[in-house]
Amino acid sequence: MTPLVTAAVLLAAVTHTGRNALAHRIEDKLVGFTLIGLAMVPFVAFPAPRAWPYLIVSALGHIAYHVLLMRSFRPGDFGQAYPVARGTAPLVAISPAARA
Image (cartoon, rainbow, N blue to C red; front, side, top):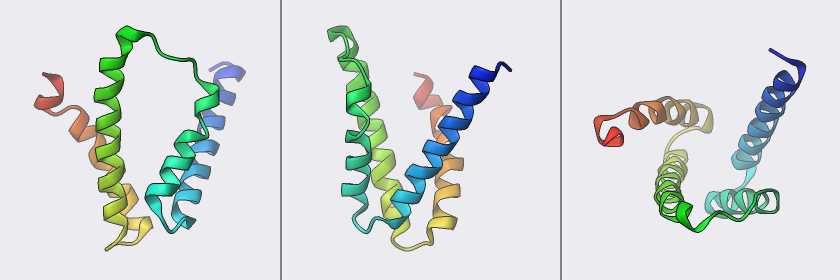
């Protein structure tokens, strides 16, 4: 692995960990996740018109995932709910319905 790739992977790990730490501390999870997402907007280009249908479907999937993730934090501990949610996401992504 090149030093640039290693740096990119480490930066991704640090930012993901930082986001999770913020999410754990914020009382209103919906506001927290929204603000974290909006903080990324200045760093991305405006999408092409042909990409919008895919973006909408992807956004709806992400919204559903985050809403369910936030709901799982209510009855359970963050340290228990988050690993279970992260572990089930790949199963949903490779399900027969997702391949259709």
